[in-house]
Picture 1 (cartoon, rainbow, N blue to C red):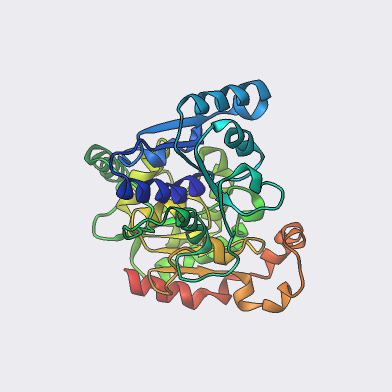
Picture 2 (cartoon, helix red, strand yellow; picture 1 turned 90 degrees about the vertical axis):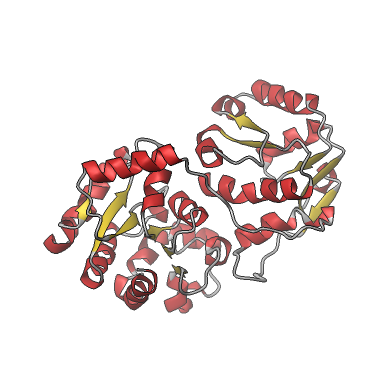
Length: 344
């Protein structure tokens, strides 16, 4: 997913700092490559395509292609079935990944998959950085993912805002309306109330982030907002593609909404973020850089911890929709107001 690829790119960034003359290649899903555009720490992007997922023959062909590159070092930040064959066939002299039962024989070095936070970086970042520990790097570690936007892309985004009449005298707030799936999406009627909170407290312009296929859900939220809120929403301002969205996000002042790729891209652009987590997602993993001011994250567990006592992740996932209904916007409304005040 986009968030995983963007966050894992910090491995490439730090390897480049440590080994400036090395060839550093990155294997990713094809659809995620826009978040790597302009990242000079990566020499080659190797694509994992749908055919590799569907065909064992194609997956083996990719494994042999990787083997032919004769890598000195392979870091497996994925460590799941699809990567095991690639690791096994790679021929790399050194192979690093997480300690997981039954697969340590694949690697020369393994590190614990940490369960406890040590900093406010979030486990998603702490775990990636732990994969560099066996190398004993002397250089200072940079934990921040980065996105690169060209001048032309910025100009195009500014032109879109101008064409759609987005006022320049207001700050711009992006709303991450929808998660990647229903069980990662804050209830639509609740989200409308969150959106209403924003212009009630700040004179802003509001952009909605959604895919064209999600327009019905986005329209439901828009229609559920107050008329005074609707007047400040520019519903049809969308990037034509992922790079277009990144450039539009770069024009915004902050983002509020569901956890997901949009939030992670905003952080990489150094934008303040307010995340509403799904009840079944572990906040400590993806609440990266949370400081209570510039990066704020809320989870039902913060307000009703009794609902999570002795409940497995599987049960939380199964009951996520009913748990979402208990995550009423009023629980964190004051935090939204404070976040807006601090960052606008």
